[in-house]
Amino acid sequence: MKQPGVGVAITGSGSAAPAAALDNHQLGQIVETSDEWIASRTGIRQRRLAAPSETLTTLAAEAAQAAIAMAGLAPTDIDLILLATSTPDDLFGTACRVQAEIGATRAVAFDLTAACSGFVFGLVTAAQYIHTGVYQNIVLIGADVLSRWVDWSDRRTCILFGDGAGAVVLQANDCDRLLGFELRSDGTQNHYLNLNYEPTEKSLVDTVTIGCGTFNPITMNGQEVYRFAVRRVPEVIEKALFRANLTTNDVDWLLLHQANQRILDAVGDRLKIPPEKIVSNLAKYGNTSAASIPLVLDEEVRRGNIQPGETLVASGFGAGLTWGAAVFQWGR
Image 1 (tube, rainbow, N blue to C red):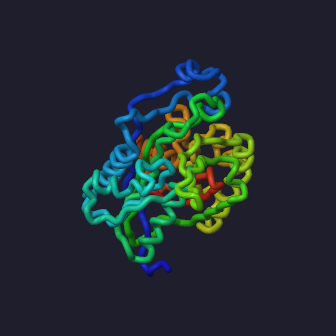
Image 2 (cartoon, helix red, strand yellow):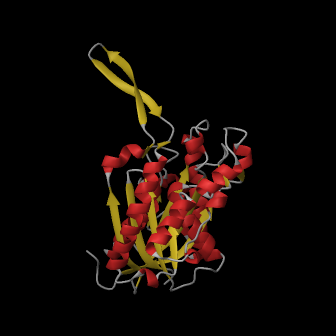
């Protein structure tokens, strides 16, 4: 239950992306495709890909450090690090590695997995710790290195994904800047987008057989995911706005998960939100999963486009299937 007078403000942002970029022309040397084919269907022109020396930890730490600095805090001020990712460096969790990397010695740290919805789910989760008075300063990171799990011979998926990280700082505040949210999941549609573990039988003794194996590359039914997104995302945004007692006319910026430009355009059309209010960096980064919303948020904040007090709607959607939206005001 929310404690009286304990609100949430988002006071800092940061982002990081690998140095190497693979553009569509280069991708055409790997699979049968072209810049025109990819760009016309997705809006993507290039994607950043992590080198072997660049890990989820290093990208997440860089984004977190930038967000903490913008908020005017030190790493030792942080109470909680929440890392939204589907591609950890360690299946036991990577948030603790980030904690050590940035020197946040007081922080509790753990991972959250909700794929491309991870940042929005993490935002709502982090806010509850502040609303209840448990923590004062939280770093929320969305980061993924999807290039590890892409089938680079499958042109249906390899054209889409890139690597990156984004982060925000949430702080306790007299005025609550998280105005409303709505989260949803539907496991009956899980088969449309997944990264599945595939076991191989291994006999230990005559009566005991276990499964050993690894994860298969990403598989996706693009048409079904598109249909799901353009139907469900406008609905969940409208519900979040209703909870905030706002309408689409009150929205200054729409921050959608950067999956496909056609999805961004379709959602904007259905909500009657003009294109100039819908931010997009798909052309440079591709689909960076949990990183996409905080990455584009940080870019727009640092360019001076997003100003304190403006009303933002962030909406993530993807594997699970999961989707959600959060309405908040930037700054204290």
